[in-house]
Length: 86
Image (tube, rainbow, N blue to C red; front, side, top):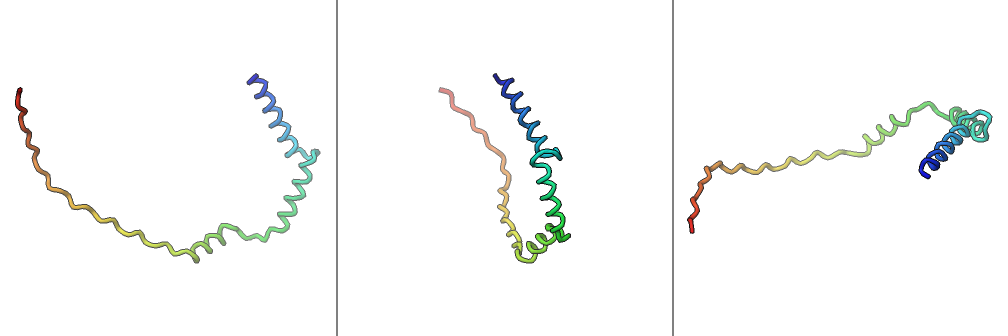
């Protein structure tokens, strides 16, 4: 049963891939027209540069406050006591 489901899944993935990338399919020519239209409308500016400039201009990043250090306790020798026997 699991192998049949896996085979069906592989067939469906192959069919979907064929439908998207084949020039004779329904989706292929529509996708080509859409990409050509987007390419013609592209202004030539990179989006990343404008986003970085707007973020740098609008937001001021506060400096982190330094953490206070705890004073170290002086090291003392440990004193061991003997137990009393019952």
